[in-house]
Figure 1 (cartoon, rainbow, N blue to C red):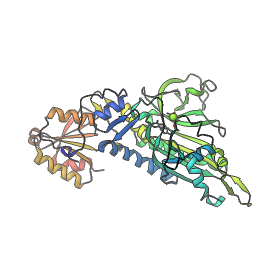
Figure 2: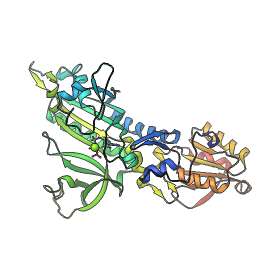
Figure 3: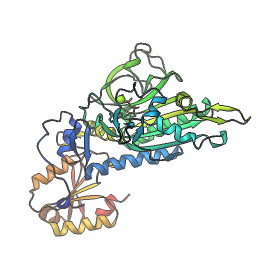
Figure 4: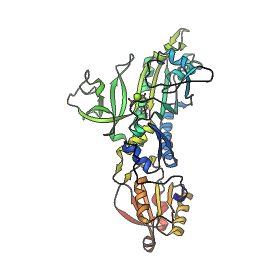
Length: 410
Ligand code: ATP
Ligand code: MG
């Protein structure tokens, strides 16, 4: 992508009505744009990042046999009444259609997925199954002041699994837990992300959250230094010790929930009378699990934890581009390098702007935060190459022109 053609440009000004760090810097760098409280447009750079996060999530959900679907974001009142959530789910956005019927904008999809699965999963032979979607969700959040961390419209990956018995759910639940850790590892968040015990429902003692440590987080967790697990403060009254090793002197930290997994049991299958036929021809209630994750919140979280005073520092796996190529009045040589990188499928943002000075180009590269910066100038060409600097380091080196591709090809 040529920066001269990019739809957005960076700005030094911090948006006045925006108090959250992740949104401020993402807006300044041109990744997102604010429409209102908890409402953001994703712009070309931002959508590239979001899509990369989504694709990592997709790949890992496929490893646990999740099949992708896309359910409606518009949901009828009746399904929420069936679970008693129409009046009891305080963040539901409600609206009325031309047909005078009431609807809610989907805030979560148990009420849609259960009647859907009921149409296909009728016999023990058809289970287990799990389906997921990556979709926009709507919640009328009261505290939509944390940028991408708490949208009123946001992206969620929600997966739902259907089982014949508790043991099968328990086993599957553990495989999803492992897949979640693989996702956080690929996103560069593993060291900061703790499996966190929080209160369960009627069907399990605990549910599990995945909490990433950050001062911007709204949750308080207590970490066990030995076990790499944490407890959510909401339940600490009963469980003020590590659930694994029982150690009591846990460390308090602020964190943001980047995912959670939950054993639903028969709560939704019984509300929608979803039953299956077992081996003996008897009718049994289906056991369910649900597994949520917030790709847009994860994007905001990554910005909160990987940055310096100059800008964002994207992990390579989700950076908008791997390389930011800067031409300092050497567009001819730089264009040849740009073309060669593209020919080798190496993602590159090419700052080919002729009316922008070197200082502004360097500042933009740091703000946007691609992992590698390549500078082409008369000085670097005199030395026979381009200057390479990683966003995470201050060291620069000259790479000979004929070595550039080797340097970046995996
Ligand atoms: P929180 O306690 O932070 O409000 P939640 O328990 O309501 O989260 P879930 O209903 O389990 O969250 O949603 C699944 C995932 O969706 C969460 O783990 C989080 O990553 C993401 N998520 C939830 N609410 C929001 C939001 N308002 N904005 C962005 N992401 C969200
Ligand atoms: Mg919530």
